[in-house]
Image (cartoon, rainbow, N blue to C red; front, side, top):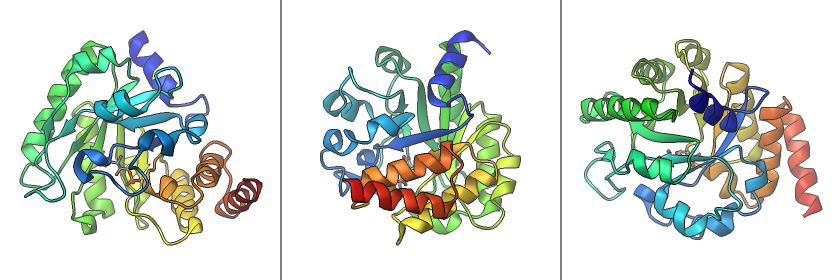
Length: 264
Ligand code: 5RP
């Protein structure tokens, strides 16, 4: 692997082999998502605990301090909205020159396996990988399902992750599933990070699925709403960080969550 590629990956994936990414890219199809109306304010206390920030170029330029930023994963795809016809209809909306100009550690784009736009998103992934490999920039593929959340079975996720890796993604971000998640990670030859999905009812539920996902082979998370839509985002961030980097179990994470909450 080339020096630049290795350097960028090691900015994101820590020396313990794990990572905690904080995504704030939701506005690119959802508009001003709850608690992300002012992304700069939302992330300010969380930045010290984030190994990477998944962000669009617009929010990066307007809300992230270039002098105080964790490593960046730039979202490269978009083109549809929650009120549009089909969330799967995305294209590349940013250029490799922009990724270089913004000094990002990686780029990310969604693929929509099994959708009407499967072919377009997979060909776009291949094109992005071609350009990024030439420049030593890792591509993180996001196995997206649009509004069809019921698609998130081990069989579907394993298929999508493997295809993303075959096309050259260096990291794959996918959903956790309770049954058979180990099939997803073992079938994917590149590191897998867990995406969050809609906010869970309790903190323990989040710690449970992250802990289980890590035991089953994920190297970390890319978790947004379950962190910054929590009434105690810093406590969530610290507790999740302890699951990912200190191997805390869900009960220990909950204890830490309560401790940090009391201290604030
Ligand atoms: C949106 C994304 C987000 O990064 C991803 O969904 C993670 O955020 P959350 O934990 O809130 O689901 O790629 O397309």
